[in-house]
Each structure stands twice: as C-alpha cells, then as structure tokens.
Image 1 (cartoon, rainbow, N blue to C red):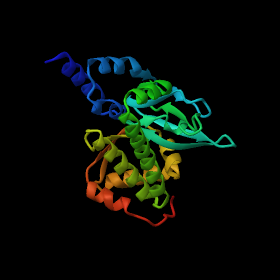
Image 2: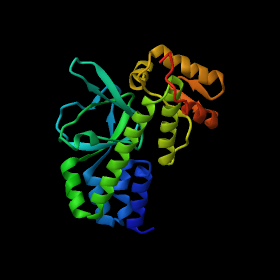
Image 3: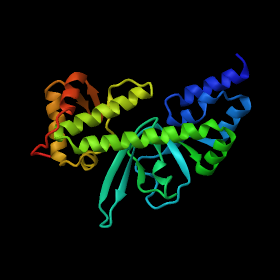
Amino acid sequence: MPATSRRLEQVNQACGQCSLAHLCLPYGLDTDDVAQLETEVEVAVPLPRGKTLFRQGEPLAAIYAVSAGALKTAMLDADGLEQIMGFYYPGDLLGLDGFGAQTHQCTATALEDSRICRIEFERLDDLIDDIPSLRRQMMRLMGQALSDDESLLLTLGRKNSEGRIATLLLCLSRRRQQRGLPASPIRLSMKRAELANFLGMRIETVSRVLSRMQHNGIITLARAEVAICDFDALETWAGHGAWAADQ
C-alpha cells in the first residue's frame, strides 16, 4: 500500500467516529497534509474524571472533540447556582460556545476518565486559509451542533417527566448511530442529580421513571449502562406532550 494511502487509513481509523474528522478527511489530503494534521491536532489527550477542560469566562483557545469518555457543560448564574447545559460523548464537539464573544459561556468538566482531541483556534484559522472549502464545512458543522442542542432543549421543555427522559435516551442513541456506533447500550456517566438538573426534574422522579421503564421492558439498567430493549415503546413515551404532576 502506498505511504499516502496507508497514512490516510490510519487517520480514518483514529478519527472515523470523531466530529473533527469532518474538518480534514474529505479533502483529498496528501502525505504532507496528513503530516500537518498530525502536528496541528493534539490527539487523545487524557482528561481525568472531575477535571475541567475550560471554564466559563475564559478566553476561547481551542475547539475540542471527545475521543473517549464523557463530559458535561454547565453555567453558573448570578447567584452561583449551576445549570447543566449538555452532556458530550465520543465524537461530540466542545468549545463552540466561545465563538461569538471569544470567551466560553460555560464550563466543561469530565464526568469520567476521558480523552480529548484538541486544535488551537488560531491554527484552525490558518487551516481554513490553507483549505478554502474548510470554512464552509466548519460552518455546517457548527450549525448542526447548535441546532441539535437547541432542538433537544426545546423538545424537552414541552414534555412530561417520562417524555423528557425518553427523548434524551433517543437523542443519545441517535448521536451514537450518526458516528457509526451501536444504538444501544447508552452510558449515562452523570450522577442522577446532574441528570435531574439538566432535565428540570427531581432526583426521585428521574429514578422512578427509569425504574418504570425497566419494569415495562423498555430498557434494562446495569449501573451506568442503559440498554434500549424496545425502541418503539421508547418512541411512544417520547411522544408524551402533557406536563406531568410529578415533574
């Protein structure tokens, strides 16, 4: 196999499930381009559980993709109360919140031992200049990520407690499929309190709904792993629209 093809194959194997792959792989890179990619992107940098990737108010320095593990993003309000904004798994991008004001609007923290791929924002600018079609691809990628987040938050706001949890599970499952991973099981690396914070529910309600889903044969729970056994039933639960009294 020629050196160029061999190196590209290695990059594809390393980055095939990663959102950052869309920034480089579709553009017919030659050997020199691949070498440049290897020097510009820090690959699989360890981020231990509980460690912060970036903090609310810090200047934007880089964008990141989750290579392994899971992270959460959260904002602090004027009273110091935390609101969890999202959960991120392999292939998801982080750092896009800083593009507007050039400062991060939230804090990203590892929920478990994770690995992160990182590219400096200034170097990304340089790559965009070097590869003209990269700007269009980057805008598409940013728009898709922001649209997904907004759609999920809007949908969750209209659901009852069962519908919110079912919708989140389906969303996480579809995100896995988009990256070529099995739709199930899903790893819920966050604590129940963090899940309740994100969904706008009480902790006991989250636990009760998950137990009810398991009792009905829709999912099975094994510590942090959630296996979806009945996708049709989960879709039905996600279709609930009325506000529940136990939210």
